[in-house]
Image (cartoon, rainbow, N blue to C red):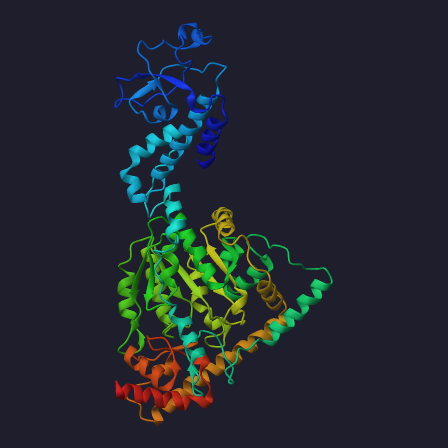
Length: 565
C-alpha cells in the first residue's frame, strides 16, 4: 500500500506538466447504486477533444465537461471519468491515478479484514465488497472455536495464544503420589503409590536374566546379527508367539487351529488401546463394562476410540472382598455383544480375585449372554509365584469356543517398565477371520505408533525361547511374589499387635502387588500429612513399596489415622 501510494505521488511529481493534467468528468446518475467507475481522459486545456489523436479510441465525449485538478478528481465521489484509455502522449496521470486508487483500496480492504472476528462477522458484506475491489480473495470467518480463518489467525497471533482456552488437566492420581513423595524431605517418608516392584532396600530390581539377555543382545549387535532398524508393524513373531504360549500353554486349541491373532504392542496400555480400536471399528455400538473399581486408565482408554464405558459390581466394601452375587447379577443384565473387561489375576486395585469355581460361573454367564471377554493380564507369575495358576482363567476362557481379547504385559513380571513390552491377542472363530483381522490391525498400529520398540521385545524373546533362561526367570519372579506375600503377613501381624480397630484378614487374603486397605480419604490424608506415607486416596497401597523395617511404622500410622478420623 505504501509503495503504491508513494509511486503514484512520485509519478505525478516527475511527469511532464506536473499536476496540471486535466480530466473530463461527467456526473454519474448511478452513484449509490453501483460502484463508481474511474477512467482517465487527458485533454488539452482549451482544446477540442474531437481533434485529439486519441479521439477515435475514446468513449463518447461528454456534452458538458469542466477542467478539474487531479487532487479534486481523486476526491470527487459523484463523478466518473468516461474515457477507456489515455492518449499515448500523456500516460503519466493515468498511471498515477491507478496507483493511488489501488493503494487506497488495499488499505481500506485490509482495514476491514484486520478487524476482530466478531467485528468481521458484522462487516462481512463490506469485507466481500472490498475484497472484490482490491482483487484479494475473501475468506469467510469460521468462528473462534472452530477452524480459524486468516482473520482469526491474525487476531490470535497479535492478541494471544492459540491455546488460551485450554484448561489445566488434573494431575495423574498415581504419578502425583510419586511427585509428592520426591518433594518430601522427611527421613521416614514412604511411597506406597507406585505400581512397580521395589527391593527390601526400596530400590528397583533389574532381573539377572534381563541383564544376561541385554549382554547377549550387545554381542549379537557387534556381530551384525541385529541392528536398530524398524521392526515389522506387528512386531517380532518369536516374541509374541512365545508370550502367548506362556499364557495359554502348549496345547491351546485356538493356537493349534490358527484362530489366535497376536501382535506386539506397547505394553498393557498399548494393547488395551489397540483392543479399543478394534471394538470401535468392528463392534460399533458396543459398550465395554469394567469392574467397579478398576485400574483408572481403563476408564480413559476406551472412550478415545468411541467405546462407551460402564461399570459392573465387583468389590464389596463391607468385607473388602468380592461381591460375587452382585457381579453375576450385573453380567446377566448386559446386552448381547457387550465387551466385559476381566482382570486375569491380582485385580488392580483391590487384590481380590474370583476362585476357580467362581470363574467357571462367570464364564458360563459370559457364553450364554453372548458377551465378549477382554482379559487384561499384567501380573502372570507375579501374583502367586506360579505362572500356570495365574493363567488359569485365561486358559479356561480360551477353550470355551468363544471370541475374546487378551492383553499381556511384561512390565511387572520381567521388570521391563520402561521398555513398553506387551502383546494383544484376539481369539477368532476361525483362521480366516484371524487373518483378515490381522490385516486390519496393522493399519491401526501404523497410524498409532508405526511399529513397536525392539529392545524389550528382544529381551523377552531371548528369555522365553531359552529353556534355561526361562526357568531362571520364573524363579526370579517367584522371589518378587514371595517378598510381597511376606509383606502382607508382616503388616497383618503388626496391625493385630497394635490393636488397630477393624478386621484385617483381607490384607492376607488379597493377592498381588496391591492391598485395598479400606481406608477412607480423610484417613489417607492423615497418613500423608502427619506421617509422610504417600498412597492413593482410595486407600490402595503397593505392598512392593513396603519393607520389613517399615511395617510397624505403617501399622501404627494406620491405627492413629483410623482413631483420629
